[in-house]
Image (cartoon, rainbow, N blue to C red):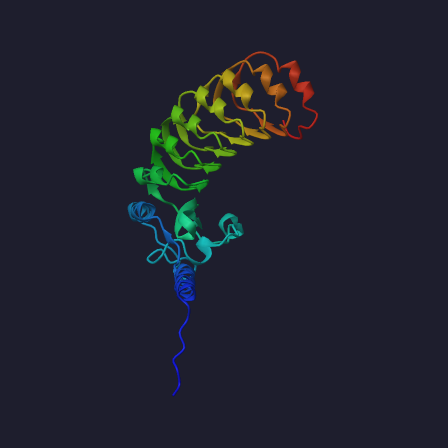
Length: 273
């Protein structure tokens, strides 16, 4: 008569926990990261208000937003003029690779008409935002200060108006800021002096006026400043000559008084003035 084999209790316990670990790992691999539901609602609302849709073959906005190319780590298609438009890019490494946040948004040259929806300012993980070459109107909300992760921001060639909100100064990680060819008014906020990482500053024909704030002496990483055809006044500040990385400066068409500061002779790296 055959005797049944039995395992020692400790081996049974080991086998049980080994099985649990592998089941858990299998479930993790099968779980696809999904878009933050609040961001999904916000983006769908923005697109609905602007009356724009997407090329379903390039990016399926009706399904999982942060999927396919939108979740790929390669960002070259976002910056390419021939890439999908409108478009987003996501980072899907949050909450143990189960949650995606929208980090880039492009709605470029699509003839969008209207104001900027408040929902845009809730996309607080954005690092890149390009809304250039549309027909956007109205002021920039003070809520833009919520976008503290922003690095590259473009509203160029629109019809935006009103004064620039001082809350822009909260965007302390910003590297490029473009508002050229708009209908803004009033001065440059002194709070923009907080932008110590800023490299590119495009405000030509933007409508801003007044003197350049003294806090701009802090902007030591500036390489490109285009501020032509605005209503900048008073003297050109001496501290601009201390912007050691400056290579391109456009100031024509303003109302400056006084001579060009002698400190400009320090700018041997400048290729355009």
